[in-house]
Image 1 (cartoon, rainbow, N blue to C red):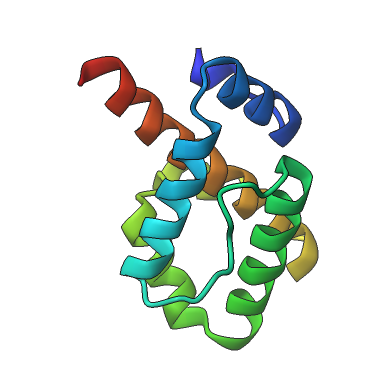
Image 2 (cartoon, rainbow, N blue to C red; image 1 turned 30 degrees about the horizontal axis):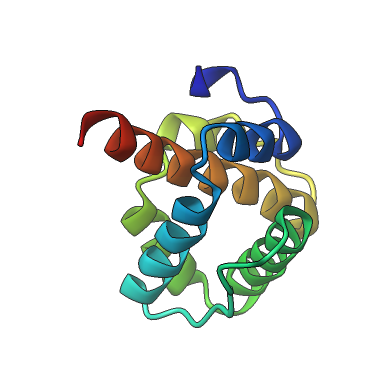
Length: 117
């Protein structure tokens, strides 16, 4: 089910349909905190705003704090093979693709927790 997600719109629709959106936001807050990266996400953040905030933060990390960026990806556990599929163009485009990978992995985590707990 989650493997079929091709873009963030489908991802957010799935999260809301499965009633996992709030847990997705909480998981993002938790993993960013574990990586010691400040991100201001409220539980009422709209999906499009969430995507924009994540994109901006990841873009900043890529350009300014690359070690913290790598640590975040390690904590979130984004699959390495997914990174190899990223088309290297410019930092904005890479940040956008990484944002989707982060959202997808975090949704997988909360979906698995909800299914097996």
